[in-house]
Image (cartoon, rainbow, N blue to C red; front, side, top):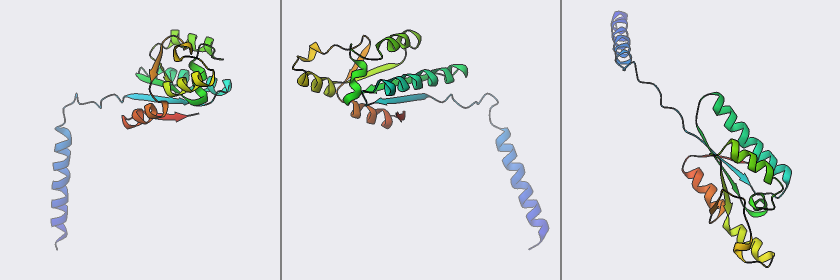
Length: 156
């Protein structure tokens, strides 16, 4: 075939694509990404609990510096349920975070709470939790649901 045909056809294609791109409205900006982070606590080690709280604080600071919103949920279950009890080894740190980052959700596994009540020979209501704690039926299920809804999942 004649090379001039390809040049004309290719040139026409380029002009057509350029026209389509130019036709986009100038105000069309990408929508802000929704940042949502789920943090798992399944250890009764105070160092692990502190690391999770540090991660929550760091994530919040990162997005705050960029003027972006973030949702953070800390889900405690199994041995990690200790983190959200009134006898938590990181109780004071959580209190500070609740004041600085009130949007952080603290979710306590109620399966774990029942297990603790049985182990300690107490009624469920005698297992006191930290103020502002949200009860979830099962911590693992909650993390699964958050992931299904598009949340980023971090296990420490």
